[in-house]
Image (tube, rainbow over all chains, first blue to last red; front, side):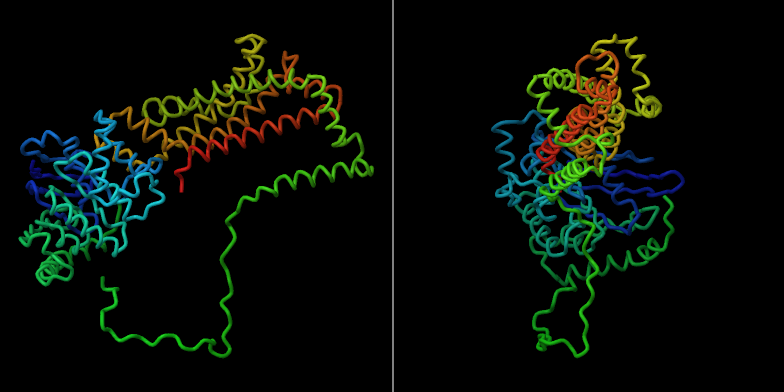
Length: 255
Length: 283
């Protein structure tokens, strides 16, 4: 299933936050959205998953999601959004319960996603016992449990320290290499974008518009730490964003 | 990643000098405090010291017998209550009234509070009503309740129920307001049903606030128990205290007041146990 944004514009009251944004998310690819703060990246992601309605334009699903997908559009949040009163497995079974999946079937799914995210030993832990990286792994496991057609990731690594971020990036690349998934990945971190993105959509400052779309052909598995090709792309992205970021930084906020 | 040391970078010299430079002063410590800890033994000791002081004071004549009864006399009165079986005659009706009244009030309060927390129109309609009822001294309404619900148990249940209802409503809708909205959005993003979101996300999330509201409500319930028993009750801790008060029988008055204190401490202890079990997940 593909997703497409068609001429999406939006304003909050008198403030125009995005203007005429059009791009598509092809299936099996990771599309990264980068842009200066306040350009509406996260709002765009909420449009894509139907948590918010754009003022103008359309968000389209092209094709039907696979029939075994319980929740085609699934989010991974920056602050993990785990229920603190449920254990790791409880947090995962939460999203299965409403689909009438219980007993052995739920057990099999939970065991599978925990194994894929290397969490099998932490099944009965409460979120307060886990580090930030572990919490985000639980959130990823929960997303995998519903077999999403598109994963909508809202700065998933921004709340983590840089070492944990590297580890989780490797995990995401490993997950994608074993079973390619479709994802929209919002971030403000250019290094993450060039490591994980097949395509990078650069937004301008408010009102957010598509400045440029950069495609990276190098397979995810071959992208290493301090790769010269990626560095060149990252420098190019920074040259695009530098002035936008500076201008965005000096704006008065009155939203 | 720029903060990682480059391999092969010159190793800076390790600290060699053990002693600080001459004339060095230790940096004064300015942290600490503001973190009260629980010391389980201290509470009982304070009680014992206060009672011992009173006992000594009344025996030595520093405190006159008219001002305060001797703690040992209060204890003797209490033992007599126990032996004659009168204690249970008073305690059982009181506990029943307290349990029934506060159960009705708190249950209704939690339900109304959740409705206010979830629905715009309920909130707009009921918040002013609750704000209007809250400051009314419920004791003033007792004659009204006697007319409405009869002089028997009905009016007593109603008084305690109304008294525990309003603080419970306010605590509950505040607690629902404080439930992390990102958790609710998460539930929606996974297509959880409305009922599931309320039952699995809103209710547990509001539980800390509901339980602390329960502490306040139950304390108010105990206060109103005495008020309710001032009118038309032959038995009950409140009736016992009021009767002792009319007779200026300070030993019996204090024995009754002690029972209420013990009741309050017990309720608070039980709630603490419930909190420890239910809120185990809290950081």
